[in-house]
Image 1 (cartoon, rainbow, N blue to C red):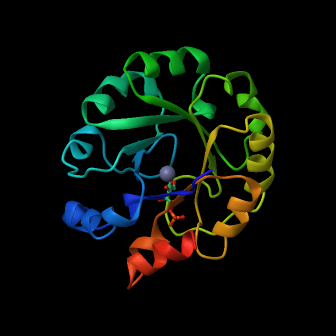
Image 2: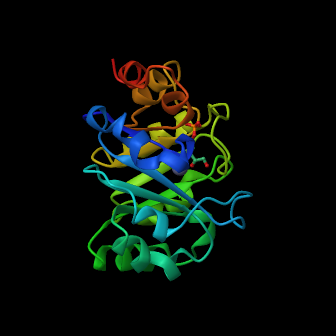
Length: 208
Ligand code: DX5
Ligand code: ZN
């Protein structure tokens, strides 16, 4: 499978977001957009009004670290989301939510936290377009990669060989080969890319 690189704009300069996106746009496959509500995670970012202002030709993958994601689906679709990923920890009827996301014409993803057993999403694996394996505790950039993500990725790849498997948190030149080896094909990376003095060179080290 082709490896896709998804810079997480959480580590970009929010005061110069579009300019920062321009510095990586030609070298990556999509943008990872972290929405946090201060409830599901102990941090706040932004919502649909800010996403609407992002100017890019790249697909936007919206990672909703929020409670009650069903309330905001339309807003994110109208703001330009190509993929909407919700967290398994906050959704009872995952299948119903996936159907709603598909009805709105976008891709559906489900994410699992480091302490969540990946098997809780087994029943919806045939329906989702993507699984986002968290390899840090969600809420902040710049944390250390949690190795247990590797087993989850390997299990997912075995169960659904064609699935888009994204991994989010602590991805750099050292952890990227490990997650690719385990079976991930979408690498989300925030601080490693945006804090680098040569972002393009950093991106290239993720998929040499
Ligand atoms: C964390 C976010 C990540 C974050 C990753 O809650 O979901 O997308 O930006 O940041 P790094 O790559 O710095 O670990
Ligand atoms: Zn994320």
